[in-house]
Length: 434
Image (cartoon, rainbow, N blue to C red; front, side, top):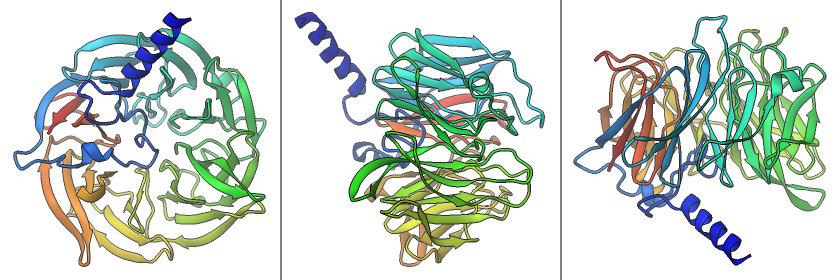
């Protein structure tokens, strides 16, 4: 008994501390708290006067997964040939610790690429992995050994989607929550993290989009409880979808707000932004955004709608009373927009001189906001009385489709280059220290 307890304590220490012991992990898409906010110990001084120092790079295959970091290791999910591959790397050196791969033949009908759109999720000594063909795996964090797997496309008769399946799973309260959009109205499913068995299924006719579910809290019937926010949609004619709020414990649908572009070929990929009992959902293609609030008696109330911020795929952040996000489908015309979170009023709009594209944002707290543009530029800015004030700016590389969320952990910044660069560099994950 003592030996088992000792092993558990050692494992908890390994999983909970980076190799430098200085800061937190980035164990999932959108970071530790699902809000793209960096650990304060990483945010302070994250961009010194000497600049960001490149430490290593790791050549990868196809895909747009964001790297995740846990316990001094980096997980990179990508495609090589007919296989989807998960590489576990040493955060200090970029050397491979282990690799897990499985067969997953797939051809994208639009020619946009066969790589995974989702990112790994680390929780409780396990890694949850969801591929473009609907295969869900749970592997051991330390070794990559498969603990269980599910074929969600088959099990829930998932409807076809534009670019395969691409919603990063949410692990919350011991459950793995995945939008599936099944043919029989199974909108979202929750599986047990331990063994993959079904815990609940939320019934709703909306399909599965590319937006990842996020957790929240709300007061219902006089008691506070956990909820899951889902921006549902997917491929349908006519297009349907919107913001769903589910009870975490049971999967009961608390409320819904329809929000979807009128054209069928529209993709809802930005995750909801949670602000207390409220959540903001945004989509490109002319639909803009909507802020909804949970009512204590159940249901959702629309607080406001806006045409000022329509994000095609990057998730906005909530910071100092503002919703910050990139508006626009054309990368050359994209602009950072700041909305008043209470009213939806546009406070400012900034294109950073043009050519920055649609950027992923990381909240650095008192140090401002980090933005990684889709062509390999990175900048740090603050929002002042006169709008956006750029503090630092540099180009890491020049390559299109730098669409993945960066990871900031252990005093290192990890950025994914997903296409060939102008200098001939291939797809890779690059680690910068500071």
